[in-house]
Amino acid sequence: METKLLLFGLVVLVMFVGFCGCNETSIDEAPFLTLPDGTIVTGDIEQITIIEHTINKTRLMTWNERQQIWKMQNGTIQEYNDVYHEVTYSKNYEVPWDLNITGIDTNLSRRKAIYLSFIEPHEEAWIQDERIPIPPFTAYSHFYALTPPQEWKWESDGRFPYPEHGAFVVYNLSLDDHPIWNVRGVATNNGTTLLPSVKICVNFYNETGTWLATETYTGRDLYPDVTWEFTVSYSGEHTEEISTISFNIDI
Image (cartoon, rainbow, N blue to C red; front, side, top):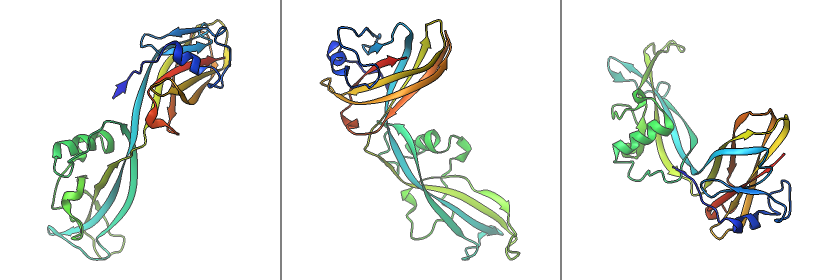
């Protein structure tokens, strides 16, 4: 969920000076403007304009996958040691902070929505089929989703010239508790000269206006009237305290 965060006006501006690491100027000399959502921009604001921006709070969703492979003959699974096997590995994906994964063992509609949104975006990849062979030591209800079987002719060993089937079983789905902040924006060069380098500092503050961290985007060879997108991410210390941001532009 995209959320635009409001700042604390001049309080945040005062806290900003001396922290960004871009052009440090005194408060009396620093020009600034306030964006429509209240976010303060300081620095070279006559040359560079931030047209729009969003800030997103995310986290990592992690899960395990089993790639199961087996053989069929006359509709019967040939479960021999050298026929049935599986490969297990872990994956993760960045998801919205407020994503709800509770009850996915029994809530099929929620399982399907999460599966199609973040794991496999194709409707035909979703299936719940208990006929897919699952080892007896694994509870089926613990699995999140199954991709449909795929068939290949597999005769490499010469002993089992039957179609080989495969499926991905997704399980152990969980959400990390560490926030990740992503600031995305659009900026333009209002000047008449080529800018070899432009730094956009994003300062992060807590709810009282105390500076917590700074991350910087650097653009290269920006021609007059050019518009470009920028992204800054922060996942370091104090991410759980972040409430507001400000920008500082340095050319």
